[in-house]
Length: 110
Image 1 (cartoon, rainbow, N blue to C red):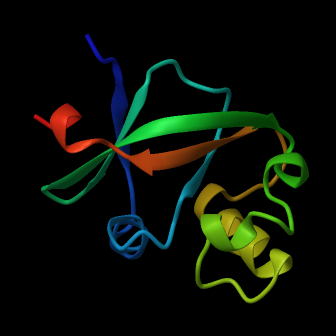
Image 2 (cartoon, rainbow, N blue to C red; image 1 turned 60 degrees about the vertical axis):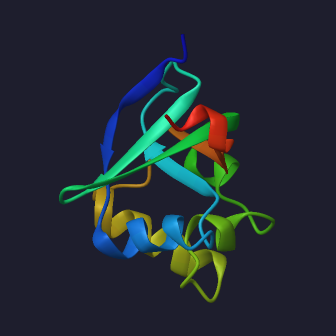
């Protein structure tokens, strides 16, 4: 049995980045959640991905120069990515978790 995380609601822009393969790192405020897969929802639409890796810590530890474009594809610099997340969460302190996602194999989608 494959365990999914609860639905993670996303903005339409973020959902489209994930769907197009532009976003492969999802950063969420809070401690890591259990589960092998992650489910994103925007309106009535959902996408399921496998979690390849998790990292948790302060925002500056999980969002870095080597991964900010995979987290926020529209960002032109690391500070833009931080500002984008600040707009969503209101603050940038506390624990954040980065979920590195990969598409599910076709056999796992059904």
